[in-house]
Amino acid sequence: MLKAKDIMTTEIITVHPDTEVVQAAKLLLEHHINGLPVVDEEGRLTGIICQDDLIAQQKKIPLPSFFILLDSFIPLKSQKNIEKEVQKMAAITVNEAMTHNPVMVDLETGLEDIATLMVKNSIHTLPVLDQGNLVGIIGKADILRTLMPAKGLPENSIKGEEPL
Image: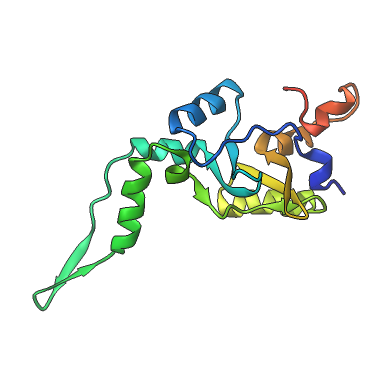
């Protein structure tokens, strides 16, 4: 069975928390990828910035919903969640827009578990860690490559080192 170490991309493009969101968007577009790991000064993973995080900046401001019961306003959405969404929409740096504490896998995580995580959590990009160190990244394209027959393809194409 294929594992994360068999399908991950090892040439990882990362950004720092203080990187501007415009620069992160440029990297995502230039490299045709869905997400970038965010690392601190020591290279430790602190989050991930995905296309979805940046697209969120373009949505409408969420207006709180509430109902009135005995002359009292009852919010249907927490004020904290609304503030978080507005902050993400107004983000200037990656730290303000990124997903903190992202879902991640290790080298031995099986392909079925990776696919399940991606579908269940609507994730497009999974960081791969080895003893706490970022060693790879798995995108949906890496999963799709496993569906292609290995016959006639360059050996490294299944590892995501060459574009489709």
